[in-house]
Image: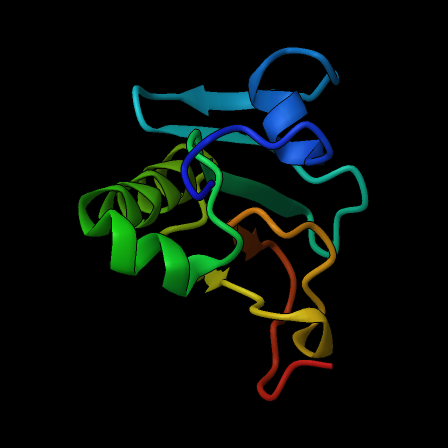
Length: 119
């Protein structure tokens, strides 16, 4: 069921403390940690504690939590000292877009040139 932890979800296991992660920030509704395969000098994942398969499902079910994810992403950019030079917040939705863990998450990327379009 949406919102409930999923036994086979890597990010649910990270939130539960069953899988280690380098934690950057925790709030009542979000959990942020460094990506284990960083694509930029700053690469932090911000996830809702509740399980939703993607950003749209999260926004439909819990718009306030979706806003919390974005707020925390901005706070992390400030803390990482990249807010002034620019950063990217990316939500991949679906396997065809590169989503590999089907738990909503935002990538906060910065610290190198991030040309558009990506890829």
